Image 1 (cartoon, rainbow, N blue to C red):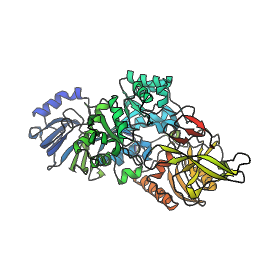
Image 2 (cartoon, helix red, strand yellow):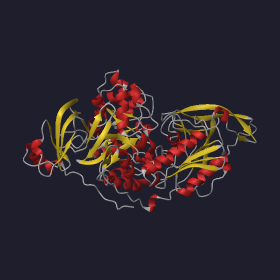
Image 3 (tube, rainbow, N blue to C red):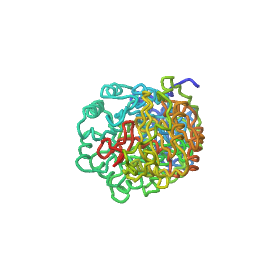
Image 4 (cartoon, rainbow, N blue to C red):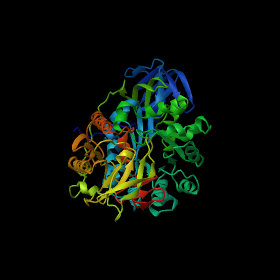
Amino acid sequence: MSQNRKFNKPQPWADMATTLVDVATGRKPADLVVRNGRWVNVHSGEIIAGTDLAIVGGRFAYCGPDASHAIGQGTTVVDADGRYLVPGLCDAHMHVESGMVTVTEFCRAVIPHGTTSMFIDPHEIANVLGLAGVRLMHDEALAMPVNVHVQIPSCVPSAPGLENAGASLGVADVAEAMTWENIIGLGEVMNFPGVIANDQVMAGEIAETIRAGKTVGGHYASPDLGLPFHGYAAGGPADDHEGTRADDAIARVRQGMKAMLRLGSAWYDVAEQVKAVTEGGIDPRNFILCTDDSHSGTLVREGHMDRVVRHAIQQGLKPVTAIQMATLNTAEHFGLARETGSIAPGRQGDFLIVSDLAAMTIDEVYARGVLVAKDGALTIDIPAYDYPESARNTVHLGRKVAAEDFDIAAPAGANEVRARVIGVIENQAPTKALEADLLVEDGLVAMDRKNDVCQIAVVERHRGTGKVSNAFVSGFGYKKDCAMASTVAHDSHHIIVVGTNKRDMALAANRLAEVGGGFVLFSEGRELALVEMPIAGLMSDERAEIVAAKAEKLTEAMRAVGCDLNNANMQHSLLALVVIPELRISDVGLIDVRTFEKVDLFV
């Protein structure tokens, strides 16, 4: 692998102010001048034709009608030829691990799509490797040519007592992380009942973040906008991305929070919530666009924040408004408006040259005043980042899993049982709490493939206990004997297995232990697809295009056995997330997230 290295950031504005003034007034030449563009000004909401930009030392010095005075012998001059000059796009809330790749590979994939600032919450790796894992991603983020800000995860595990993660973080860990160079705030506070109940850990972490003058990320995954919601807002979270209705967005904005509208690979929450602006007339400056979770295939084939902005425009937003939601609004929220989020003097020279604004056709991408991508391809080399052995070989089963581990014993003497069933909702994170009448065969509860009820299991993988928790799930549509397993199982990241055949379920779980983690699909005893993810069982060390190709093969294999869900592997990986209603499974058992209690499998 290439040696790790750090791309230079611009000097602080205060240290460069005299140079910026000299360039702006013509006393010194700029490093780069862009001529004849249409300035998308997110401060004023205008598009200003005939604009020139002058950049020195990685910062904008002049934005106005004529920068000829800033052109010297060593100045690079670019003709925008009437195209749009757009601020570099910001993703306000995201998890790199959901892309199945490292921070480096994620940046390689998204920079050509115009993303120049990201606010990442590495709570996936934190659940496996703890604070040391967060530090690994923090340091990798610092080595990037774009801004990758890190939030310290707040809920590891996400719901204490309802799951057992590979590590835990507390108030002291948050306090320590607040001293790190690249920590921007506290990651999404998913334990919203803890905040409402004044849990000491939640209250302590939020207090440490606010004392440090940094931003507290929110995650209120409940439709109840009554007193619990008001208690959560009073507790300190400054934003929330879990809304799905226009009323959710309005309620958050009215409480002084930012409504984050997400369009990920499997979460389509912009269209409904943006009606608060397009139909309800709510001030759009309190709305922010984000992705939350983007699959590698989405990044390679469809894009990143350019995809979200394009989608928002299609929902009726003016292009400038949609761009504000992905640039200035985000920067202001995190206290970085003097650094990024707009094309204006003193800010970092992060901008795009766009030929079609509504379609977000990005011709060139500049970060810190350097051309980093053109016509959809990188123009710079970003060396691979070396992860240590301590981040690998993290799948510990203790023993081989057998088909019998997935047996579900029926109550004595029963010929039929009524079972609780997790119901998948396509393109949304919540699930339904369903019930189904299932037959008993030889004392074991049988699946009902005719009615799309198959088995789901969580296999403990952090401490080698050999424990397996079993339940039922509906919504994948599997038609053949098959099983898919992954070590991506938000948020505790044990092995989660969904299958119609117990032998295939065992084969899939054991295969992941062999390769160090990832996704795998078996059918009738044969491996149909595999995505190896050896870094914490969460990320591949291969190029994003290779991972995307393997993930596409997985998707095709899932279709071949009957599953047509959009981004089904992402829906699969969320079924253990015990902080989003209604019904989930963890290593502890079946969890009703409406009451935050473990419940019996049988009604």
